[in-house]
Length: 155
View 1 (spheres, rainbow, N blue to C red):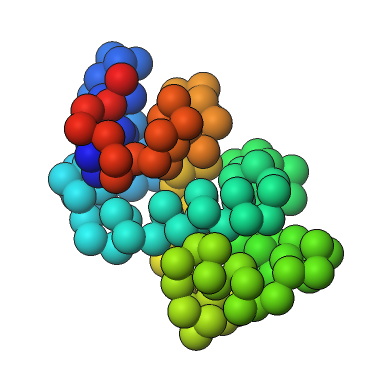
View 2: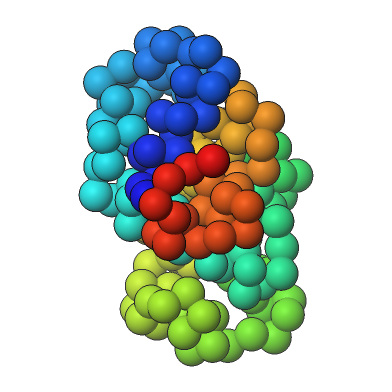
């Protein structure tokens, strides 16, 4: 199962068109459609955010915006990276330990924490999307508590 499949099923469940959801996310319809169709960076990076939230024992939304609300996300450049670093340091978790739990290299973690990763864009989009469909963002990565890539179908 792919993240794009989850978005499609949730959009359909809410009876929203691609155009309506794209407008709500401030995207062109073709940009949104590419996410549902499995844009490679979109499929790769957001699940790392779910792993990070579990490792840092924090709601995923709080790694995107300090309030956990989309209205406060992206107010500053590199906000997601700074929130991740601050939480990691608050807990006394080393870069090596967090990178290992996220199944990424320390160099990738440094890219995330410096605010230079695709999570800066995709995190905000997913937080807005989660608010539109009224579900926690974490459910996109672990529906029913099962890792998305282990599911054959989305409930």
